[in-house]
Image (cartoon, rainbow, N blue to C red; front, top):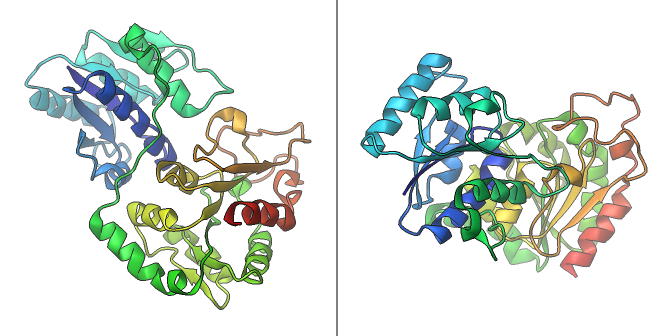
Length: 340
């Protein structure tokens, strides 16, 4: 059977949707899966031999309805006009419209998707469960009883030998010097999901006093922040690595300290424990860590959390207590417990 998965959301969402690939392959080992994603998504999934990737540059050259028509033509050519099951964990207009344009007999999406009437297999988007569980429930609309006794697969990434070699080369000075190594990803796209820089700085000093190796990772946009945290002995790789190279680095460390951001899901895919600091968002939204031994640190005394699905640019209550109330000592103790 042919399957199409549409996921063009954030990096973390794309990583978590890889669990769907594993489930489909387990139920239907002979399946052919087309995975529609963004240019950034392609860099994440490029080594996954289980799928055929189609890049959809929704904000660039494929913008607008014409882009969807061209994408439909590409899909039909790959499938040789054969039918396919269309599955979209992405809940926005483009995803719903493309499924309808393909005229597949089975089109699966969530009830709260934009233009959800275009799907003929729908399920409620439940909160309070992990995103991988939600996506697993979406697959039930396609496979039904075939999923009985199964549980959601873990997300997975496939760094290449070159990714692993470069990660090892860049981290070698730290790996050779320290027995216990902590990876820290202090950045986030959203300001209200970002633990204060001065707290990260204090945490780094506390860990350094325990003779712990520290590696900083992040995108180019995190370079300035990480530069400010990179005291003597700290290896700063922000802006130097691809997502798969960063995932390889995470896999070489004892624990990742991060916000509710993409590196958290990279750690889940690489089976590395995480100490995840949640501010504007909460675990109930479904994007917590999956690796064994992981810890979520959050302020559960506040009634204003969550203040948004993704966080925001500033605290709507003007106190940011969800983050400033989480002191470095608390995070430090969580990290020490894992690396000890």
